[in-house]
Image 1 (cartoon, rainbow, N blue to C red):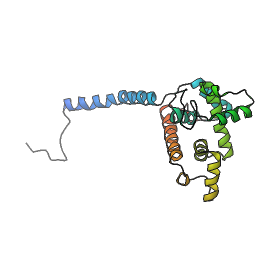
Image 2 (cartoon, rainbow, N blue to C red):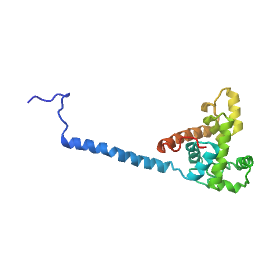
Image 3 (cartoon, helix red, strand yellow):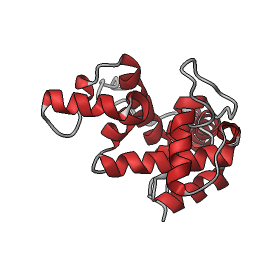
Length: 199
């Protein structure tokens, strides 16, 4: 009998073939389990409030969910050392300004209400996007680092849009990176639902 050469190994044995088919058959199951885990880490809590606010202000739900996840981890009672409150971590002064612009009553306690916080935060995010020509990076920088600071960075560097490398605050750079990443994850694990602007 002629020995098998390295390039002529003969037919795959039946046990090995069964193992190969079993491995292939397990791929969809493993992928489904992976999606379940990722969706648990990236939930779509308060979906009725998010959908309503995105429809009202023409925002992508993936962006709003990403901001909520990064800012508060979906904890409605979250408070930052700087004084930001609620799901979208609004400063009381920002909440009061947004409510005034929207023509609705306001007290600082409403920032603890998920529906009110999401609506006010979405209005403010829409305002920043409009103010900065729809550029998400620049709008997110203003959301976290302040409009005045963003205008100063833009003026100092004399270019548009804002380059994250020009941002002077490490926290703001990290915020933009995390929101951008989380937004993409939401779009991937909830395909066809979160990637398009509502309204």
